[in-house]
Length: 214
Image (cartoon, rainbow, N blue to C red; front, side, top):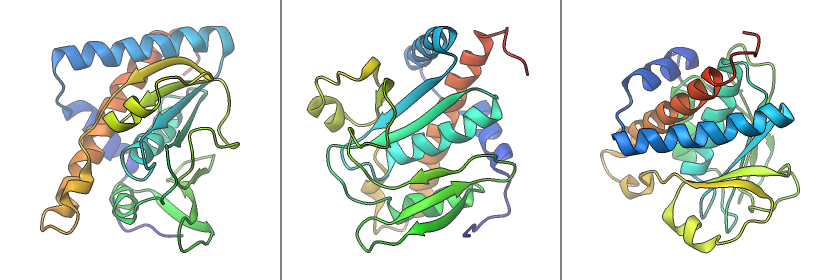
């Protein structure tokens, strides 16, 4: 089981949520996403968030993993999944960035092209299986709320029939820093941004569901 940092995932997440910088328009949009999640939660008592990016390698994986943690942190019955328009792999720099935030990665299915990992953190009661897959992979529950995290995925997925709601929440692509001296720094910055915005969404969902037990 691989973990490369002694940092607490909880502390990383709470700090990212507290310090994240978003414009007023972006914050309103995050609240809009939270409102839709809360509405679906009220009627079904469970929600699946499906994060979509072209290669399902970096941003959608970060959002997926941070939502997995946020569901535990806020004690919400929310499932997080991810997919893409093509299959690549769970990017190694993305994995290293999440390990620095306290996540554990256990290799569960080795493949040179697209290995699978069992992802957990201190105190987690569930395991998230992470690997690159298509939007309509059989492992992804239906229906779901679709959240595209890159412009390419948003343009190439004009219609997703399984989605009860669809939102476009793009993040900067850390791939631009690959092979540069700032690679680790940029991946960490984007991980913090995604964690913080996920924190805003989930906190607002919790606020809109006061009947839920702590």
